[in-house]
Image (tube, rainbow, N blue to C red; front, side):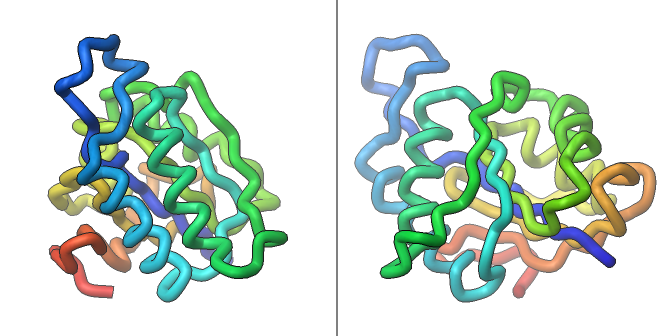
Length: 170
């Protein structure tokens, strides 16, 4: 049985707000980008068992908009969400550790984080580097969570749904 990891970089943040990095909100463009990611996931990935989201404001706001689109009209299908301090990192090796610790009871997980960590994570898990601009995603199929980064995963899709830009087509 394979598992699926959806790596999502937060949508465009607002650098004009004089605030700490952790508290930086989404910019207007980011608030428009994130729903497109959710719609794409609903159409191409389907249900997500768990979301692991960085504690930063921009990642939480991104996931809020993505998950609203995932649920669509079925508001009972809310995704279990874990806001994780350890996901607020800029190092992909930290994210590999999070993936390896995912419970075996979940088969599809979304991880919402930051660059360069998300680009490094995709490369560590698949051997392929793909650009992860704001609101980009990468869908990775793995043998299991525990062997993530030890056995190569398959990059099933990578791109930014908001502007239909893909480096790996779904």
